[in-house]
Amino acid sequence: MRGLPFSIVDVFAEEKYAGNPLAVVRRGDGLTSESMQKIAREINFSETTFIVRETRHRGGFEVRIFTPAAELPFAGHPTLGTAYVIQRDLIREPVRKVVLNLKVGPIPVFFTYVRGKPDILWMRQIEPRFGQIMDPRRVAPVLDLRPGDLRPDFPVQEVSTGIPFVIVPVKTLDAIKRSRFRQEKMAGLTTDKRGKAFLLFSPETYADRNDLNVRVFAHAYGVAEDPATGSANGCLAGYLVRHHFFGEKSIDIRVEQGQEIGRPSLLLLQAGVKAGRIEVRVGGRVVPVARGRLV
Image (tube, rainbow, N blue to C red; front, side):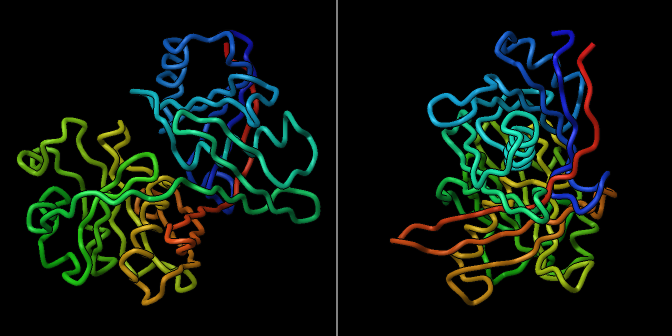
C-alpha cells in the first residue's frame, strides 16, 4: 500500500475547504478489498475512492467507493471528484465525458470548461426508483422534529438512484436547523435491517439565489451528517419531478447543503421526463486541495 499516489479534492465546492472532501487513491489494482477498507477507515472521510485501472476498460475507468465502514455501489460526490482526478492526472487533456465503471454500473460524467480548466461537472444518474411512503408522524421524532414541521402537501418517501434515501419535505429553514438524528426513535419505523438515511429539504434558504436548502443524515451508511451528497440529491431531483414540487415536470435548480456543519456546498440539479422515464443530472464544481503518497 505504501507509495500509492492519492489526491484530495473538495466536491460541490465553490472554494477550497468547502463542499465534501474526497480522497482518490490511484493504482488500486494491487489492493485487496480489505486493504481498501483499511485505507478508507484510516483516511476517515465520508468516502474514499480507488482507481483500480489507470487505463480504460470496458469503455470506462474502474472505480471502487468505500466509506470508513463499507463499500458502496454508488455515491455522488466520489463520482464527480474521481472523474476530475482522472481527467487531470490520467487523461491530461480536455474531454467531454469520462465514464466510471462502478458497482451500480457505468456512470458518465460530463465536463464543461472555462479557459481550458474544468468548471461544472455533471453526472447522469440511473433512473430513480420510488419506494414506500412513510407516516410523517413517525418520521418526525426520528429527526427531533414535530409532525407540524413537515409539509402535509408532499409525502415522506424513500427514493433510490443506487442508494436509497428517505426524502422529507420540511416547512422552514428553522426546522432544518433544529433537526438532528435520533437513533433511539428508529424502533418501529421500519423493518429494514439496513436502517435509513434521510434527506430533509426546505424552500427557505440561506442565500436568496438558491432554490432549496438540504440537510442529510446518513448514519445508515456510517456518516453522521454529510456536507454534500450527490446520490441523495439525485433522489431529491427525481422526487421533485414526480411530485411536481415546483409545479412543473422538469427542474433546473440550485441546492445548498452543509451550512449547518460549516462546509457550505452548492449542488446543481436538472431533471425531467423523457420517454416516460425520469432523467436526473447532478452537477457541481471540484476544487483541488492536495496531492501525496500513502505512507
